[in-house]
Length: 100
Image 1 (cartoon, one colour):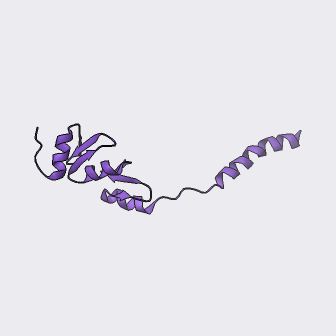
Image 2 (tube, one colour):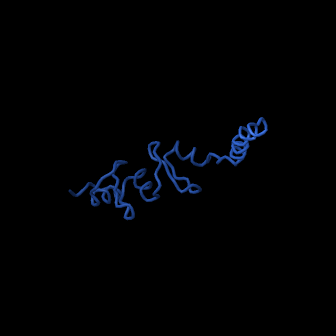
Image 3 (cartoon, helix red, strand yellow):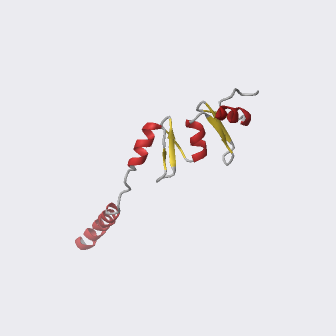
């Protein structure tokens, strides 16, 4: 009975030991630098704007630059803020006033 009990109790510990030996994902140094500077990490294909993660490179460029429109996401940005007005986002990217 003691043998069965010790095997039953030791079995979960053996599985826990196997899981803990898996490699731990390393933190990306590029992301750490880009997060501090609102930059884009090419290695991880993600960027940062005001501390938030951005997965679309076009949106990131529009968010962190003068502005612009991302056709694939159908989102626009003016002065770092999201807008639904494509003409205003495109005007911001060109440095001209919004026509509306």
